[in-house]
Amino acid sequence: MSRPLASDVAMVLSAGLGKRMRPLTASRPKPLVRVAGRTLIDHSLDKLDEAGVARAVVNVHYLPDAMRAHLSQRKSPQVAISDETEKLLETGGGMVKALPLLGADPFFCLNSDNVWLDGPQNVFAQLSAAWDADRMDALLLVVPHPRAFNYRGLGDFHMDAEGRLTRRQSRKVAPFIYMGVQLVSYRLLRDAPEGAFGTMQLWERAIAEGRLHGTAFNGLWYEVGTPAMIAPTEAALTTHD
Image 1: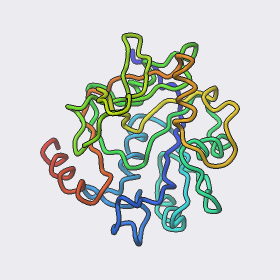
Image 2: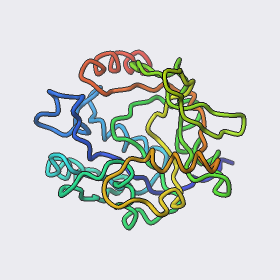
Image 3: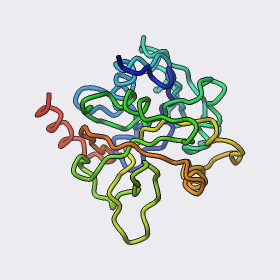
Image 4: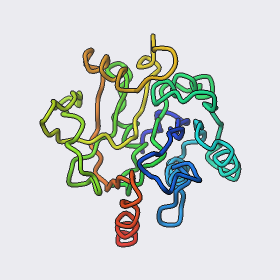
């Protein structure tokens, strides 16, 4: 019998300006760019729905009316909007602002520009199975380089035998890439700065305390950060359909 999901709610980070995706984002927010016939945010929401996550909180900033109109057509998961139209709060500030809408502790958090094919189990079940609230402030889904497509970076994290993460050192290569999906405890967000700030600020503290953990993704992940990455991603998805 499979373990139930650790949470029934997710935050979908969708408020960025999408500058790397220009010119496609000149007239639409990046989450509404289409890949293989679906918008990027629908790829994420579809994965949540398939896994049984009932609610999603989506933050909006750039072209928010287009986001609201699109999301109003979703039946499941149930979508609530965290409004950042007055000020873009970045990833960390966005989570803090959304807490009253999230309710659940812990909660899933994912970037809205993720495209992936699951391995033997869906990523939310994998995170739930590995979650240990006594030891973790956040559990990040990380992918090894051979399973990361379109990616040209040096990696983000090292992971020890206990699953604890440490950051890549300058001018070195790290074996794992953060693929934009995590399970977050409210403890990670304690004493958070006001206003806009990045999640890395909180991750750094968790690393120092030995409470930032990872679990290795064994499916296929596609980075879709620029227009040039769309066609190879669509070709790969067609191949694996």
